[in-house]
Image (cartoon, rainbow, N blue to C red; front, side, top):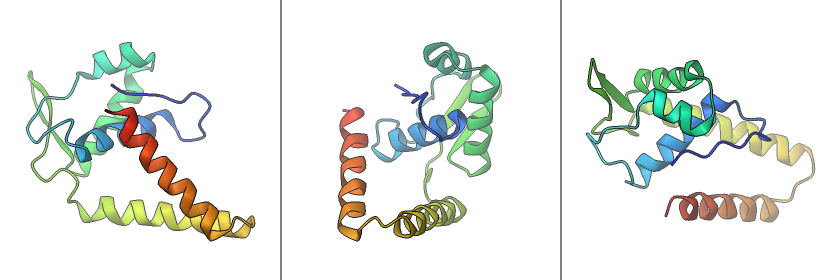
Length: 126
């Protein structure tokens, strides 16, 4: 369910967070559905349990998930509606686009890369 790219420069907790948000946005994980446990994700991915906890904590801070003590974590009704989450995502995109532009990457090439990444992400969760 969760794919970790060990070669990526993106921190593992961010990868977990992003993977879960993708599953939520694709409605693989519907509102109020239970997430796999932190221990389960740690075991399946070979990641330290504290790394997974950090990803869950950030998702909970942004209102993407909520926890019920003794029961687990669940997808919030309006999981991806948090304005801070959107603002952060756009800031990250802006930083990446400006860096690509500074390195001479053409707009068409950048757009093609974005389209390919979106297509990959959707296809990897089918």
